[in-house]
Each structure stands twice: as structure tokens, then as C-alpha cells.
Image (cartoon, rainbow, N blue to C red):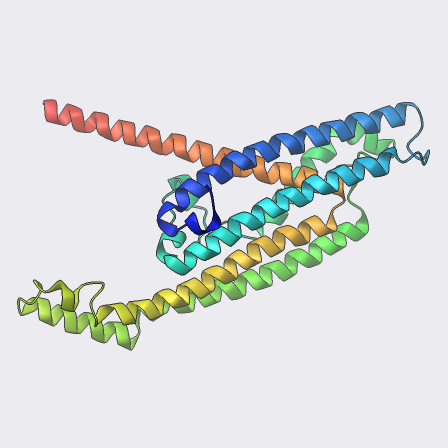
Length: 292
């Protein structure tokens, strides 16, 4: 989409679709950078020049750092736009219509669970250890996540524990906000409005509807509380991503971001396909019933 001011809650799906297209483009760049790095590494290894000090390795690391920074800024762009839209319509952002039912089933407070970053990291690490086992047995560095040092693993473990603790605190805050739906203000309001309906006053939406003077202030307070928690959840998501990247080397960061993009894009695609198939099946059944 164009200017930042154009992004609103009611058209966020357009921004999201464009953002996904950009993520696809960044994924191709990440894969190309990883392949180029691997080719260069193997060439240097074959010529026994890994420690030649000719500057090639540093140049490669610099290029990788730049693309990692660009991809992280792309995530920043998403959460900055999402935050502005949360201020406009927190309910739409908590139950995003642009997500599939498959994605909805795994949402945590309107997005991905931050601690999933570590499951993803260790899953990719395991796959790369298996793929590079021959080189690892010869103590040949692979440059990817299989090369995590003991210090890196220690830092990641500490980060994981810290993230889980923060995640629990945000989850507890959301639970408290959800419980407020049954507090005294809501209980009294629902009773008063129900009595008005019972007395045949339900034909006056200006008094009992969502935007009425009685209802809107009470619900607005609840929505403001949800917005606060959603901001906290999003802040933890982007903070966790950046903290993981900070622990990794540039090439390791590239591999992690590749895994994250692949998982996000494929789950979104599979979910959309499943929803489309379900909709087509429902439409076919409805047509058959009408015909019979």
C-alpha cells in the first residue's frame, strides 16, 4: 500500500497481502545469500584458504548482515502498522479475518507465540546437524545453525526461559482482561438492557445498541484493556525475534529467517487452501440440496 496514513484496520488485509508478497521476495533473497555463502565457503575450503585473511569471508558476512537487517526492518514495518490499526479496532486485530482457520487455531493473543521461536530454531538446528553430519565429524565448520557454540546455546537457553516468563505474564494479563467481561459493570449493564428489551424497548437501538450512550463506554473500557495486552504481546514477539537474531552469526541469522518465512508462508497457504476447499464443498452441498 502507499502512505502510512492509508493503512487502517478496515483495510489491513490489503497491507498484509502486500507484506506477504514482500516476505516472499525477501525469502528468495535470503536463500540466494545462503547459497552464495555456502559456495564461497566450499571454494575456500577446497583451496585451504578459510583462514587466509584475504577479506573474502568478512565481505560475505557484511552482505549477510545487511540482508538480515533488511528482513528485521520488514518485521518492524508489519508491527508498526499493526499497532496503529490496533488503536483503531482492537477486536479486528485480535480476530484477523485475513488469517485462515488453520492459523487461527494456533494464534496466541492475535499472533504467533514468541516461545515458538526457540522450537523453530532447535528444529532447524537438528535438521542441519543431520544434513552436515559428515563435515561435523571431521570438525569442519558448516557456518549454519549446526555450528552453534556452547556460549550461543547458553544464551539461547537463557533467552528462552526469559521469554517464557514474559509470555506467562502477558497470558495472565489477558486472562484478567477476559474475566472483566463478567465484572459488575457488565453484569449490571446486561441486566438493564435485557429488562428494556423485555419491556419492548428493543426498538430503540440508540439506547440499548452497541454504540448507545449506556453500552459503548462500558465496552470501550474493556476494549482498551485488550488493546494494552495486544500491544504487550506484539512487543514481545518482535523483541524475541531480534534477541534471537542478536545471538546468531549473520549466516545463522539468515538460516533462521529462512525457516521462519517458510513456515509462515506455507502454513498461511495451506490454511487458505483448506478454507477454500471447505467453502467449495459447502457451496456444492447447498446447490444439491436446493436442486433436490
